[in-house]
Amino acid sequence: MKNSKKSLDIHREIKIHKKKLSNCRLCKNMKGTPVICSNSSSDILLIGQAPGIKEKVINKPFAWTAGKNLFSWFYKIDVSEDNFRKNVYMASICRCYPGKNIKSSGDRVPSIEEINNCKQWLDFEINILKPKLIIPVGKLAIEKFISFQKLHEVVGKKFTKKVNGISLNIICLPHPSGISMWYKKNPGKALLEESLFKIHKTKVWQNLISKEK
Image (cartoon, rainbow, N blue to C red; front, side, top):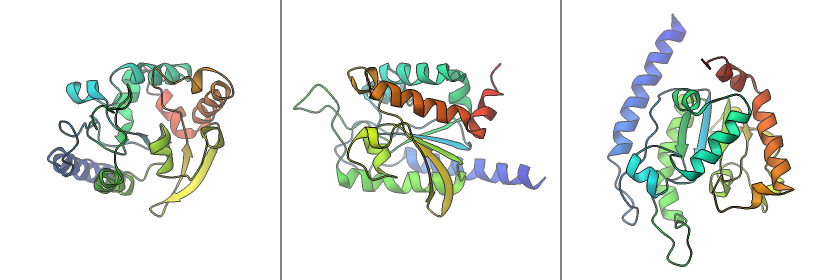
């Protein structure tokens, strides 16, 4: 009964949180409005960098090429995209599309000010959800929790840390961009496989597998 009430309280708080987030317009250089995940509670928190242009239009995290790659990785460890989206809370360091980088073919990296503006949303989600596993995807997301120079220092490992006073596991993934070569050849390819293996072994991931139909 207590757990049921706690779950209802979390859902209520997250619903209010998402309404506030959807109305956020703090960053004048961001394009469009915040992209928000559909579910309300999870022991797993996946954190990306920022939405892409397709995510902005569809209003769904990891909805295009990077998402196809990401969910193909999770399919290898027995979780479908549908199951993942239904049961895992998906967040990002910045919630709006930053726009194109005028000096390259990629998207603009959010500024420190924009990252700080968005910090309140992620901190709230960590505090209310109290996840057991955080999966940061890409350099910007990983840097939120772990200091590093090169991806090979963090991908393929499991870290146990306190985040906002909450003890949890962190397993990092490279960004699944279609143009990235890091995860397509060694050592990145092998380290990605090691991260996926470690994710698969966690109790919360096994619980997620049990929800497959």
